[in-house]
Image (cartoon, rainbow, N blue to C red):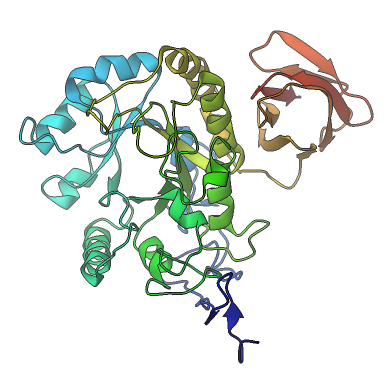
Length: 426
């Protein structure tokens, strides 16, 4: 049979009404209206979201409008206070979310421990909102984790919406973080939390409501040892970027859910032996997930190093992962001002063939092209076509003490398994 009117047919042969999009420019200076239109532009040197506040024009006085003034969050989820030195030694610079420690530490004691370690924080408010927001180590306030896991009572939506309204009424410019289950974002089943283009169901307007009540949109799909709604995704590290692409409405999706800043989680332990996975991510797989997120527009990364089953541990990051993240964190920290500039500016670009993927930034220090091999197999003799490199005939490979030739706007290089090369052209 056929579906009537504008209804669509799902994979089970059931007709459903697709979710429509309502433009929203309330409280916005600039950026998308959520439906493909614009809420306005900023006057230079201000940029849209320049100081980390989405859809608001920032003056960009000190950092030319860089997101978070050029700070790139490298976070760890629910840091246990006695382990702060271990996280800092790895290059972690931000603690995300206050853990439930059954009274061992109060919220204030946890916060004090993070400050003593030199960490920024993203957490629920503590005390007076105005006084709390003024603390220089507080990057953003946080909603409860993963509110999108069904069943979702109406009270959950109302609580998050009311908190957001109260926090913004007190301090309009303090960002608010929310984290979703990335596997649920990719799964369009009518029984899941859904958004525009998904299959409707009891939670048809779920993600739009949650996204409207936050400023930083984050997800935590774990392709190696995660709770996946589709086992075909198992061991595919590119799924972390696919979630961001769906939020942005990039191919193969066509409806943008949000233009707000995005971040993503990276799994860093064998955290649950009952999920369908049989091991932790390897160091190279973690490297691939870090850069896949960045290439797909993440403004920060967050690790999940805990173990939740069968026995709880605050941290069980494997030695090879720890060694790898220290290397990558050094690069991320050194390039934070580059990474927090305009993402994939149209004046330059890099074109590659699968399994490679690329992102780019245009900085006062040069043009940066990030090229990742998303495969567990080496790729030799790969061609990278550069646009906007001008007459340059040489590219420096960042952190590798070598250069590669540029001929007719292209360069050729070899990639190991899950290798990342960063080409700098001046």
